[in-house]
Amino acid sequence: MTKEFPVTNSTLSATKLGELLQEKYNLSENTECKLFRAGMNHVYIVTDNNTKYVLRVYTFDWRTKKEVAEEVRLLIHLNKNKTPVSFPFADNLNEYIQELNAPEGLRYAVLFSFAEGTKSAKFTAETSFCIGQALAKVHKETESFALNRITYNNEVLLIDSVKRTREFFKKETEETLFLEKLARFLRKEFSTVANEQIRFGAVHLDVWFDNMHFNEDNKVTLFDFDFCGNGWLCLDISYFLFQLFSTNLNENDYKVKAASFLEGYETITEITKEEKRILPLACLAIMTYYISMQCDRYDYWTNVFLNEDHLKRFIGNLKRWIIFNKIELE
Picture 1 (cartoon, one colour):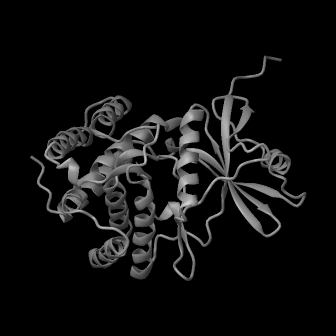
Picture 2 (tube, helix red, strand yellow; picture 1 turned 90 degrees about the horizontal axis):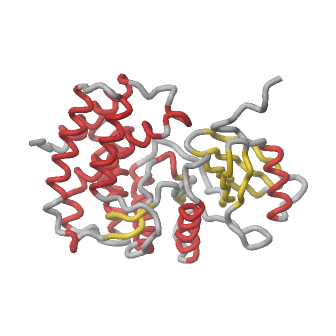
Picture 3 (spheres, helix red, strand yellow; picture 1 turned 135 degrees about the vertical axis):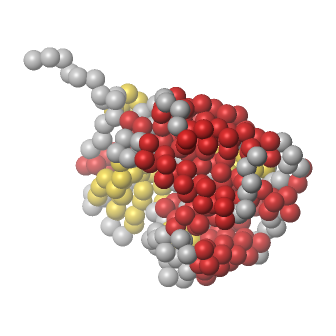
């Protein structure tokens, strides 16, 4: 028999994690832990009698402990200021981050509150209004809040990302050439931005229906701040609008919900004229970054669909947005 074979990515036992949580967080013997999703990170639903939690187990070598700690620090800040977010719990020793000796190496885990309600891509204009309010409440507390994490600037969003995508797909295609052209265009456009008129702080960077719950009363709770970092706050606004556009193929439906979202946001805090000017552009930079992240984390969650056809569909969606917003690439 050979030696124990090396592992690059394991799925940890939900039963054993439940036992660990009982010990670390004084949960009852009735606690149940079940795997909900394995992907970029592994997510478990934890139930202790009538109380639900979410346990996120970060994949190996994805986030450093310092990065996880900064995400936790941000969420503690947001929770203390009564913003609508899922928040982390400390264990018996007042530690928020658990260290797990997985077969592939050290992994981290954090226990979060369960966001009330459910998620759905098909929500009403009224819900869109409330989502705008929820995001604005978060932004009021994250403006000028600095994180010791990534800063989403041109180098990250438009230079390194395109290089990473090109290296993954190897051969030059119409789609990779389009990404390079788009990145050059956006870098030029962003060089003209009046930064003093753009709010800057901690951003979520993944605000879409899959990362929020809402209930029958349209109470919205945001979660999954795994991609949080420093950047223009309007990145979050633009990204939500793009995702709304992608999930509402009827453009009239999109227009109504987008207007409602922006109206809800501005009942809490103003979006500056300069921010509004670049809203159609900012999400294109984020999407350029995210396709590169899919390439980077290929082994963990995207190998089922990440191929040239996926890239074509991805670029097609970007082009649809560009046409809708009458953006002329030079």
